[in-house]
Length: 170
Image (cartoon, rainbow, N blue to C red; front, side, top):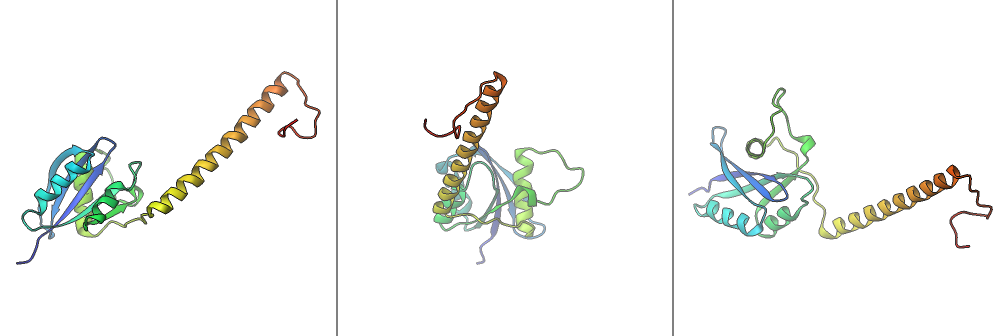
């Protein structure tokens, strides 16, 4: 017996995940499963229900501020999952109404049709290094902005520093 393939579209938010399912085949049913809390235990319960009838699950969700925790969880548990860039999702002209239900159904349908392009998901080490570099760049910009603000403040009150440089220990 051949296993059926279910394409699962996830619309992930900080507190919730909306789930849409597109059954295999061009005419396969596309349905809204529901909304769950953004919690791996609840996602695990949904997965167990969906694979109980022998289905193969293929997950897809948009890259966003929630990161790659769901991707890592699913791939660690031998599930097929891809993350896609929101800017690369094909949009129909005139279809500007966005909500969680429509988004997850659209993701499932487009994933089934093979119309989504996955993005590179960095390893945890790469992601940590990126975060460190970004934090350093943010701190450098903040220091530069503070120096400029202080310089403008002193200029406004006609205070002139006569030393060699303004930003070293006296």
